Every structure is written in structure tokens, then in C-alpha cells.
Image (cartoon, rainbow, N blue to C red; front, side):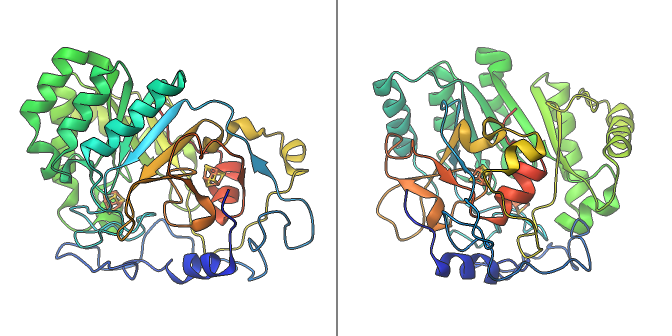
Amino acid sequence: MVGFDRRDAADILMNAGPNQQRGRSKSRNAPAGPSPFREQDVAPLRAEKFRDPHLTADGSTRASVALEKLDTLWFNTGTLCNLACASCYIESSPTNDALIYITAAEVSDYLNQIDASGQDVREIGFTGGEPFMNPAFPEMLEGALSRGYQVLVLSNAMKPMRRHEATLLGLRDRFGARLVMRISLDHHTKAVHEAERGPGSWDVAMAGLRWLSENDFALAVAGRLLPHEPEGEARTGFARLFAEEGISVDAMNPSRLTLFPEMDETADVPEITTACWSILGKSPSDAMCSSSRMVVHRKGEPRARVAACTLLPHAKGFDLGDTLAEAAVPVALNHPHCARFCVLGGASCSA
Ligand code: SF4
Ligand code: SF4
């Protein structure tokens, strides 16, 4: 594994502000204010944390996670998105192409690597940006489904997706529930959703969600919790919304409605040591990087590469190499996301 160096940490922290990141500029309909999901008055991350891949700031042995089995291989289709959400964790926008469009040939090459290795990968995931912005996305979808995989697509269900209705209906007819569409609906209220995603984003997303539901797609929703919003209340709110809108998603089922914890990398969080697993009653097997990897193509790099997970496409310490074989190495939990999102928040990106 490539080491995590100080410049990476500085880069991560410097690039944390909404709408100020790598080549990111506000779109016409970008949210006007700060994210409603961001906690206020939090203590800032202490500078001495997340510096050394082996040791935490107090000299304890940093926890790491081995790849137990590659269950899900993600592809980032590119960071371009029709939206510029206030706290998009990957800094997507209509202008940010820090991750360029991955090609169908690159996707096919990694699927060939799986075939050649004989690994029993269950699922292929596609995320962005907005995957349907990538002109080759239908070809990638078809390729992954034709090879027999379960396929999970993360989309905002807006105009880029709606342009491909005919293709999607065809894939549904041929592959049924092996194609799962997971739609981001940040909150069960229009006001909070649009404070995060921008004016006009709610009605269009709801129309897309209704279209998917009416056409019997295997459907899931990804939402978020406001600071201090109890999960039960959020699920009840989503259940009410889905009932009113006729959307067939069981809001009480965590695999159908995923509610993500916040990912503020500028806020202080404990580092995870090897002793934390037993103290917290958690296992390395619970972290996404024990069972998944993500392929990205960064702008300026000659080819696609494999990152440890969906959350950290840019941090060099989490770039594991060109090939899936090279990327089958343990990952040091040397980023605030590892602590807040995965270990303490207990989140996972897969269905
Ligand atoms: S829709 Fe998703 S990828 Fe696009 S800016 Fe919003 S959070 Fe980021
Ligand atoms: S953010 Fe989570 S999945 Fe990614 S490397 Fe850290 S622990 Fe693993």
C-alpha cells in the first residue's frame, strides 16, 4: 500500500469547504447557504491526528482492515454531476471533472480481471457524480448485467437518468431485480433537501423516483440524518412521504432506506486503534474496505486505478494500485472518514 503523507492530510483538510474544491464552481441552481446536515460549533480536527499510517497521535497502533473477500467492485463513472450539493462528499458539480469519465473498455478490463482471478464477486456498483452523465454508462450497465452480476446504481433520478428511460426499461425487462436503482433523497422534507441540493431539485427528483417505482424497478433510497435527528423519526418521515407519493420503498428496512451519518472531515474525531475493535464491539469485517474496492480514473493519470473505497478517491494513501490484484492489501484507517463514517457511524455503501 502506498503510504499516507502529510501533504495528503493537508490537501484533504484544505479541500473540505463546500463549493470551493477541485475545479468546483457553483451551478446556477446551487444551494445558497451552508449544508443543513453540517453540525455547527464542532471542535476542529486536531492537526496531529491522521498523520502516520501505522501510529495514532498518541503512539498507539493504528487499526487496519484486510480485504477478506472482494464482494462489491465499485466504479466511479466520473465526478461531473448536474447538481452541486452543499456538502457533496466527492465534491461533484457540473464543472468538476477531477475524476474523468471512466470508459466502457476500462470497466470491461476490470471485469476481465475478476474473471481471470476466479473471484466470486457478487455485485458491481456504479457511482459518480451522476452516472447517467457519462455517455458510455448504458454500455457499462449492460456489460455488468450481462456477465451475471447484481448491479447497484447510485443516481439522483433527475434529467440525466430520465434521458435513458427506454434503456432502463429494456434492462429491467431482461435483468429484473438484478438491477437496483438507489436514489439520493437527502431528506423527507422538500425544504431540507433543497437547502442541500439547490432550488428546484426536489420536484424533479420526486418525479424520477415515482417513475422508477411505477415501472417496478428494484428501488432503494439513500437519505441523511440532520444533526441530532433520531433515526426513528427520519424513517417515519420517509415512510409518510413514500406513502403519499406512492413510492414502493420500505422506509423501515435499512437495506432499502440507507441513512448515512455525516462526513465532516474538518471536525475532531477519535482515531481508531487496534484496541478499539473490542472496546466498541465492532469488527474490521464491518468496514466497507474489507469487502469492496472502487475503480477511478483521475484527471491527468494515464489509466484507471483502484482506491480503497468509495469515500476516498483522491487521497494517495488510499490509492492501492493499477490492478485488483495489487489492491488486495490491508488498508490503514488513516482518515477521519474511517473513524466517523465507517467505524463509529457504522455506514456501508452497498445494498
Ligand atoms: S447529486 Fe450526489 S454526486 Fe451530485 S453533487 Fe449531489 S451529492 Fe454530489
Ligand atoms: S473510509 Fe471506511 S471503507 Fe474507506 S478506507 Fe476508511 S474504513 Fe475503509
